[in-house]
Image (cartoon, rainbow, N blue to C red; front, side, top):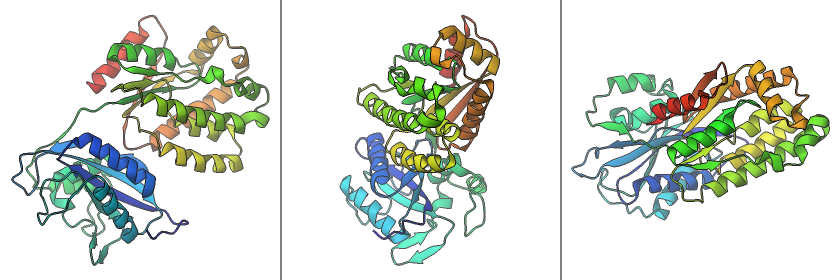
Amino acid sequence: MDFNKDVMNEVYLCLGGNLGDRLQNLNTAKALIAEGCGRITAQSKIYETEAWGSRSKKSFLNQVIKIVTPHEAPGLLQGLLLIEKRLGRVRTRSKNGDRIIDIDILFFNHEVIETEGIEIPHPRLHLRKFVLKPLADIDKDFVHPVSEKTIATLLKECGDTLKVRPIQQVNYICIEGNIGSGKTTLAKDLATKLNAGFLAEQFEKNDLLPLFYSKPELYAFPLEYSFLLNRYQQITDAFKSGKSLVVSDYSIYKCLWFAKVNLSKKDFAFFKKHFHAIESQLPKPDLIVYLDTSIKNLKKNIRARGRAYEKNIKDSYLEEIGSQYLRGLEKLTGFEKLILPVKTYNSDLNAELVKTIKNHIL
């Protein structure tokens, strides 16, 4: 596969199939893409639709993903074809027949490419709602380089009458929040109500944490890197448990947000490269819930839990962490985010929050 390691191309791919375990085939294809083709930066919802341009009665599952890749279009296409073959696809003369997996390049940057075997943008994407709807999930304002219309406009103008409906698929929920926001208690209650696996961060086992609070300039990098590795292992192990739904009291992205605040510019640049390499190997959350509360509430909760190493946390530090969370959440794409304002803490709060989250996902 041809590539230029100094250039990263942004590519939109459409994945679909209607044979075998359709959902597993999509997930396996994404894992292989992340392993050999590029880093997945966004994912749409998964949609079910009738076969397009075919009399088949077997419905398809389709999803659009966005990747960044050093590969040029011909090399990327070669890699995607190998993934299709590895998953068992057998190509026939029928362009729209049943298949285990199909991976199409929709856009490659904003380039128009017409060579033997490659036509980008995909020549029929504007005719297919099962492509346009998931594309709009990721970037409805992306401009088609040929028609010069946004994805939102193309979807509105599309004459495709086949039903395209999102499937209800929530496998991984992350409860996030600043230090002392109450995310662990909420995550535990939510997991119980949903009969889900509960993944709790094991931060108290990290001996570097008290050292960081006493000498942050000395221990910031080893602390953040140890958290990155620990969280990677915890998340990986959690998804081997067999539970169909996992609720966690953290997301892998907090590694990046805390590191942004705690590390020097040089150390953060180094950390960020390692973070993206590790994060790309992990399952993406379907929903991140962020508990947004005041510094006053955070300090009250921090005092109540009585951890000695947290007693001198400054308001300015909590404000900086909170700002980084909100900026980071805004940049994340490809899954749902739910920000829940918390004005006061009371005995009924978690029950109210659990109800709000359940209503959101069910």
